[in-house]
Length: 116
Image 1 (cartoon, rainbow, N blue to C red):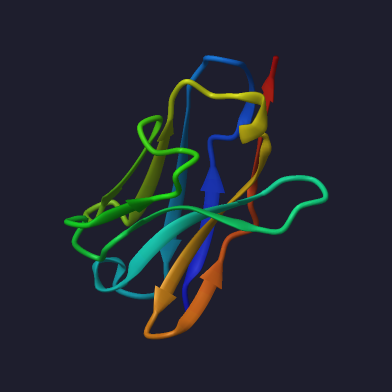
Image 2 (image 1 turned 90 degrees about the horizontal axis):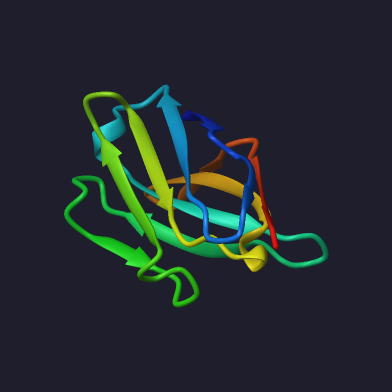
């Protein structure tokens, strides 16, 4: 089992920045890939970014590439999402995800609201 807790969401003006954190516990953090997803009101949950267990590989949705940066600190059991140049369409609940050999674990989500 893995427990994931997101933090760092909030209200920000368009063009601003936020950094989300995801603290993990329960399994060896450095042994599994992780990612960020988001769900806007009335829409399905969508992929935002992912990072390999070592941090050596990262992947981004086209809509956030160049603005968001995913990273992880395996010594702190924490994953991050640095979000710059935020847009109103980035408004959503952001979820942390861990993929352990096909079993997926989710955090409770953190709200990000970008005002125009």
